[in-house]
Image (cartoon, rainbow, N blue to C red):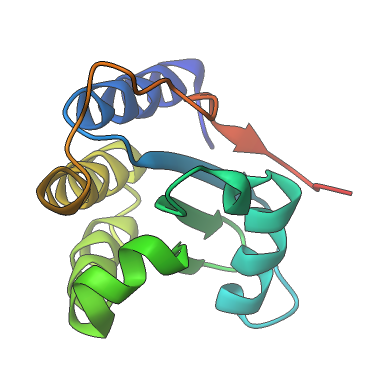
Length: 142
């Protein structure tokens, strides 16, 4: 169950992680996922228009709660910089806490890790603007 308190904690982590970067981070929760979670995450990524950021540096954390599936993906701008090792390492850290049911700790830690990589390759500049909402999206994205 994703409580309002968990949503607020995750949104605040996104806000803090994005303070030092032009990168964009989103989190999406669903109850079920009948396909590969990475495939579903890419679908959600496009529905949330994360591929439309100026530097193509969006990161999506996707969680299907009942089906216990998780994916983290990043647009081409960040993926080319960090490579597969970063995604695998971050995914493994997040999954460790997700399996214990601690959604807030899992995602907040993962978001901060992603924020550090984004800051390294896409530092904040005064002309940067928040291109995507920090709100958590939940449910089917048609």
